[in-house]
Image 1: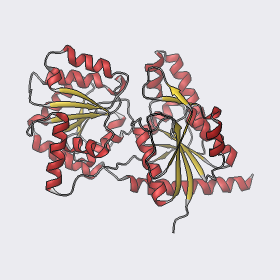
Image 2: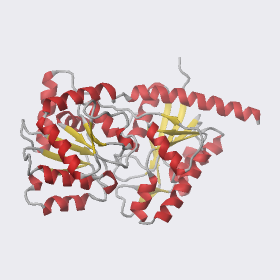
Image 3: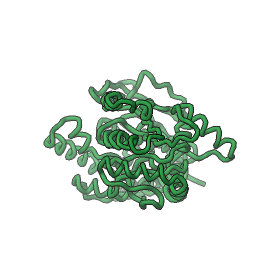
Length: 398
C-alpha cells in the first residue's frame, strides 16, 4: 500500500495557458491526486480560468507580461489571502517547474515547512532572454539567476538526457534526475471511431477526405522555427499543391505569421492558423488525421507535442541533432531534416510521395516514443519518496 503524500506543484503559468510545462504540471497533479494522495497547483491567476479539475488549483495575484501574451507575472509575496492558505497546508514536498517567481515562492514554502524542494529544468531560458531583451549580456545574467535557483533545490530534474547537457552548459554541476514526459492521448479503439475522428478533424481544418495534412502544435514564437515551416510550405505548394498545413496555438509571432501567409497569394487556401484548441480530444483527432507532425524546433528540450503526435500514430519531422529529436531515428520512428527551409520542404514532400511509408513510421513512433502519464507519475512518486527520506535523514544528522 502506497504512502499518501501532500504535494504542491508551483509554476509561472496554468490554464488557459496551454504550453508543454502547463501540460506537465496538470498531469502530475491529476495522477498524483488520483493515485498517491493530495496535489495542489499554485500559479498566477487568470480571470478567464474557472477550475474544473479533480484537484485543487490555487491562483495568486498577477499581471500580464508585456509582449508575452497570454503569460502573466505572479506576485505571491503580496497576496495575503493566498499566503495565509498556502502556509496552512501540511506539505511533504513542493515541486517548482519554473525558476522565477513560482520558484522563489516554492523555495519559501519549503523553508517554512522544513521540507524538500524539487526543481525541474524545462526550457532553454537563454534563448527566451535573448528574444525578449535583445541583449546577450542580460541573457547571461538571467541564466546565472536561473542556475542559482537550481542550486538551492534539494533535487534537480530535467526531461531528457539532452536537456542535462543544456543545464551543464548553463553552469549547473550538481546531480540531475531525468524524468521523461508522457502523454494523456490515446487513439480511438474501433474503426468507426477512427473514421468519425478523421471526419471531425477534416471539418475543423476545412480538409477534403483524401487531402494530406501537416500539423504544428505549440507556441507561435520565432524560437520554434515557425518561420521556417512557413517558408517550406510556401515552396512546397508549387511542387505538390494538394496538402494543408495548420498551426495550433498562439504567441507573440502570430500576427506576423498571418501576415506572411497573407502576403503570398493563394497561401491562405493551404495554410491556416487555428488558434488555441483547449479540447484535448479534438486536438488528438488532428494528430490522428495528420500525415506528419511538423516540429523543426531547435529550442525545445523534450517536447510533449512529439509524444502526443506519436501516441496518435503521426510521425514527427524534427531537426537532426536537436534536443527535440532525441530518440528519433530518420525514417524509422520519425523524420529528420536539416535546419533550413529547403530540407524541411523536401522532407514534407517525401511524406506526400510515400504515404504508406509515413504511416508505418508513425506506427513505430507510437510504439517507441509514447508513454502514458500514469506510468510517468509512478516514477515521480517513487522519486519523491526517496527525496523525502533523504531530506529527513540529513535533517536528523544536523
